[in-house]
Image 1 (spheres, one colour):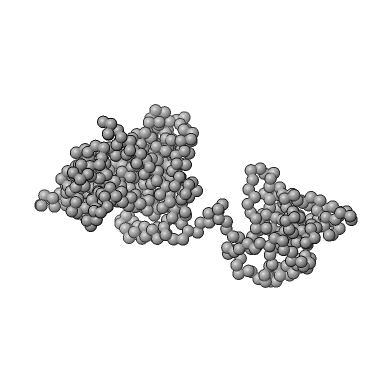
Image 2 (image 1 turned 120 degrees about the vertical axis):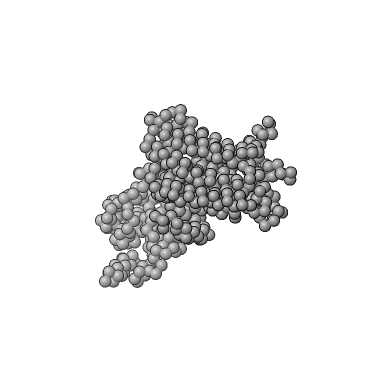
Length: 322
Length: 198
């Protein structure tokens, strides 16, 4: 029990620090891509910027609109935050020599837990937007819900392909099944679908219609300020980290070293893969404009879903024939 | 629709461009720590100059005030006392005020001045919290006599200078008096300007 608590505390600290620096690096990388230096005033190379941002968010006034539903309005950010962190209860980061994973809990049905928790996450967005009692947040919440349903479907289907190849729903088992071939090679289509749906799942550009600063003034979190806004913000980045972790666990071989380069410990490879994914999301954000809403839906239902289904059927046939 | 959705090539091209720009040279000048060097003829804060002997160049003629399109300059002239001359001429400026909030930094005052007394320096950092602080009177405009005589206006070359607008070094011309007749210089300037206008 105590060990679990200590593990959780350490992991929470690691995830929050990663969030803080992911945010800094996103601003830096976006800056470089837009020919700006990015934040560089607070501390050397801007490294204390996350601390300054945190202090600012904590000190800001916590506003609640008159028309808001006070209880749900106050609860929503924490639903987002809690679900974002809950995923890390089962995410393994590496394995000991005997195959036991570095994770708080090694759940057999890891992927199911993951999908369940990430689906709950959207409640934070839709409740927050609805309880704000304001038009832009409501529009953002409606978009968020619709988008989440459309893309989660294709995402789940891309998971199933991996499940069939690995023959297990345990995340550790899936990583172990990738010792010879990483699943992004046999599941190339599934991998592409996952990458696209993961962007939509985390509500990031080019699928950030939930926030859409230019049309919805921030969407679901328009009315939020201070620490409550901060909670949504943390949740977004932690979710980004989560989908990056899942991508490396399910498709990029987790902590397996590529080309037999085993001189580096598994955790280093895992961190590198997650880092590469995080960079990819930042890169996308600096490159692509936002989708139009109807095109987002068309793309989800008429393009991604059929392709994901096709991929699933093909994988099933392949697995059945072997 | 189909074309737009499947235009993966364009997306990859875009990703390539942003990736390339990540390593491109950034044009940012990190202002408070690094300052841009302005063109030599940059129009900034005004300065009232002195002659080499310490006397004020301003003779209180108010030509700058009448030339000013923004009505930013107020000059009150007074007679020089024969035993304590402020300027070499008959008169001097008893009070000289420029409202830098009204000023449009066009430099017409500098052009109008027959004695090259009022010049625009390259200094531009005059932010303040109070509006009143932007009315500069002689105590802030006039070069202190122990500092020097002021920044002479730059030589206007014939035609448009090749480096106009380019980042160039600000010439430090403090403590230098060109020593020629201001009136003559003014005339030369006007002729050149006419030549430019055709």
